[in-house]
Image (cartoon, rainbow, N blue to C red; front, side, top):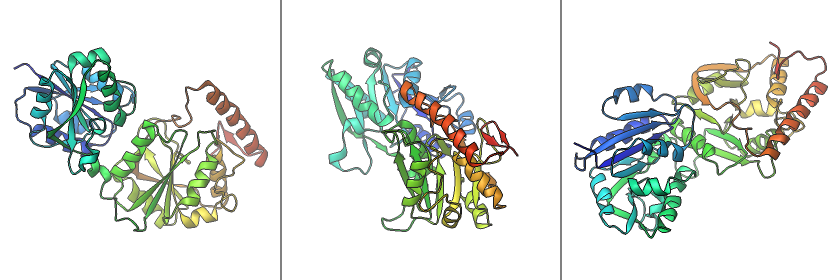
Length: 397
């Protein structure tokens, strides 16, 4: 039977939410006939799940993370259906979700049909905020999916279709559950004290990279936690200043400093906490993809409040603010070694890291500033510790 509908599922997160999404899709009736196309957007930990789906779904893989819109375009390019249905962030379709969504496009004035969100109030049921939408393949090929973040795709696509005289509508009979279950049980009643504060400095708090990082923290953290995001991109203030600001704002007894290109994986927090409880001043996880530093990879590390106070450069300044962009980790490592308390590697804690994505930029002025600042920070560090042995940018072992 030929497929009338092609369901495209871009995936960048972990297997638990993806499995719930697939279970929801599998519960649909065979009518309308449909195919399922999964686009693995350079995720970590999905291979065992995707291997179980072989033969039932088509699996496409991106060599590097391209984002939701590009992944959806990749899937659409391989679709055979007359109707393209896109599910965002592995949301979970309810039983009977697909048929009314596809049927809504029988109205020639409708260009985009959007599922409603389970449990959401009527005022928030807008097609531009949907977790799943359907468009005709012919229309999608004419207007394309705009290169915007996942939650903006339906809205941007609706605008493009409106220019062609087509409406975007919500379909009450098509219901999808938002991927709120990916918060891993870590959400607690308002006012409860968090166990953990995660500090995330970024050059763009509105970026898809930050949203992916926050979603990964929520999905993999099973304790009460708060997330402090510091936007240091307007103008750029480097790394030391936003981290110091984030640590001053932290309320929890444990803190983690995390680059915005880090993806913590399931079970990441307990091993870091155990190392701290055993006496480590600083603990850090294993980076399972790409380069790994075993002395101190500062893209993700954990401390207690006592460690923050004991090893701060000065009052309210954990990192030396004169080291603006680089060498803060090298400076901290030197202080920890001098105190006889080097960072402890908690190997059972696993993360994924997009090395140097945090300080990467397509802006030529920002890139030039980064190059100049890295050189200046190196000069300041070497002036602070004359004669210290270096291996590239790192301390010699």
